[in-house]
Amino acid sequence: MAEQWYSSCLVITFFLLFTLTISRLEQVPTPPLPLLPLPTYSQLKWQQRELIMFLHFGVNTFTDSEWGTGRESPAIFNPARLDANQWVKTAADAGISLVILTAKHHDGFCLWPSKYTDHSVEGSPWKSGRGDVVQELVTAAKTRGGVDVGLYLSPWDRHDRRYGDEVAYNQYYLAQLQELLRRYGSVEEIWFDGNKGPNAPNMSYYFSDWFSMVKELQSSINIFSDAGPDVRWVGDEQGFAGSTSWSTINRSSLTIGSASIEGYLNTGDPAGTDWLPPECDVSIRNGWFWHKSESPKKLSQLLEIYYNSVGRNCVLLLNVPPNTTGLISETDIQRLREFRGAIDTIFSSNLAEKCFIKVSSQRGGKGGGFGPENVLDSDHLWTYWAPKDGDKGEHWIEFMGRGSDKGLRFNVIRIQEAIGLGQRIKKHEIYVDGKRVANGTTVGYKRLHRLEGGVVHGQIVKIRIEKSRGLPLISSIGLHFDPYWHPSGKLL
Image (cartoon, rainbow, N blue to C red):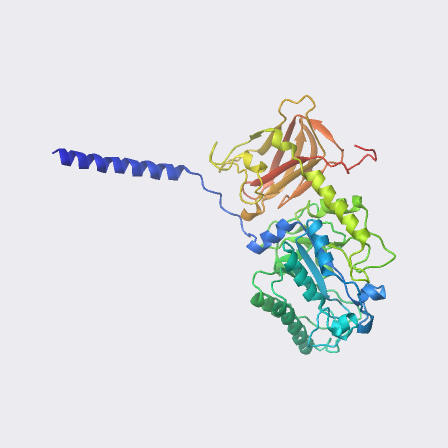
């Protein structure tokens, strides 16, 4: 009897423990369902770069032109002091982790010794015809570490006689594409455009074939073009995204090289079926290639571009062209240092970290893993504040200063969404002590509000989500002070 009683107790105890464990597991709140479409791993990695670099370099550098004719002699290309290590160091010092080189521009001159043409570095006096700019960049990036390489191969080729013969030229282009993607190791982004002059022969590019070949050779690469498939053009070359900026769009509505779609590219589409985030390309100078007569943009201009690109859910592709010696000019390097220093100064301190936080509701309740404390950690993708399911009321998050008489003093507000589960926010407003100081539509990976009224002082900052696709998921919030922002023309 004693043994039977003991066995029964063990069974009952085990059953109660098992039931309790199952009950506790059922009570652990799960993440909300994603809202399609979603970014790929490569797209998320690209988005987090925020700032990347273009290197426009070639025969145009030596002819003081933007578009070459294709009739330039390779003999003019002779960058006697070319140092790709300097390019990579310049990028790394500016906090840039991806550099895209113009392996071939519209003039058709190749910065690598392509076996399919004699219009390349092989015909130049640089290194007695044995040089390879692409290889030098790849080697420098690999040696330093932390900087990846991308390539631009212009579809429009003003030199090659096959251009205009649709089949022959597409075969030629694919052959060069294979050379680049097989010879030089991992390429993180490859750049395509549909740009060509009005008098260029009328012919079609086999973009579908090219894209398929790219993915076959390097499956993790991001392909940039007007129509993606991984990254889209923002629709201008000023570095400005639309004030509404969706990462989603309908690729079926896009045609590479069509000017009629620039507005659609600029804003994206909340009902878009494809995740195709925008990239803002702009040069640090007026031109894309180096010109002795030009100087870099002012710091205030670069910051304006930053707020309207990175601050509007984009990645900023900033062109920094090497000069005729093969080096990035010291004036450009100095401006990049100032630019990176300004960004670090503005965003190194977050006043929100010193505040009490309240929210309209919280998924899973207190301690459920989706609380407002997540908007202050270092993970801007996978930890986030989520309102509770079924909450039909207003969604808001509020920051209150911790009893300081001076209150909070800032002029920049940063909001980030957990885009790994889809882009959601359609409309939001920001209040300080009950007064609206900013409003906007989309947020995406990052939205920066540089306050038009200048510095504000207050005790309570409230961010209200007015409209969203499903529940809003906010991964990070910052209250920052920008000492370079002077809307009134006076020092702050």
